Amino acid sequence: MRWSDVDAAGIVCYGAYVRFVEIAETELFRSAGIPYGKVFDDLGVWLPRVHFSADFHAPARLDEQLKVSAAVKSLGTTSVTLMFWIDNRAGLRIADFEVVLVCIGRDDFAKRELPLALRTALKPYQL
Image (cartoon, rainbow, N blue to C red):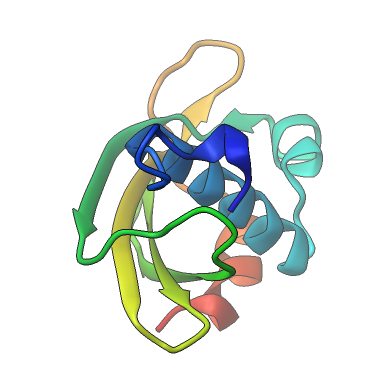
């Protein structure tokens, strides 16, 4: 953990976790072979976040190394639910997160079915 991620007590601030989850989400899509640029440009959709939840189990501290893991919890008709978990090096669970993305058209912002290419790419990452 970096100095910019902690408060005066040396504990990671809640807001920093949103950034950690966003980075893990980006890397999940990249690993699936569909980086966001491809999703947006080639598939013609946006994936706005409509739900973000967090459960914190233990504090993380300055200089502590954390592992952020990501997976697809479910693939709906028009949405993707992602799950994230953060553990420290000792294996202690620090936090769990759930993020729901909804598929909308870039041109009209109307809800759309998940493109088959997106569904196919994310399926191997589903738990």
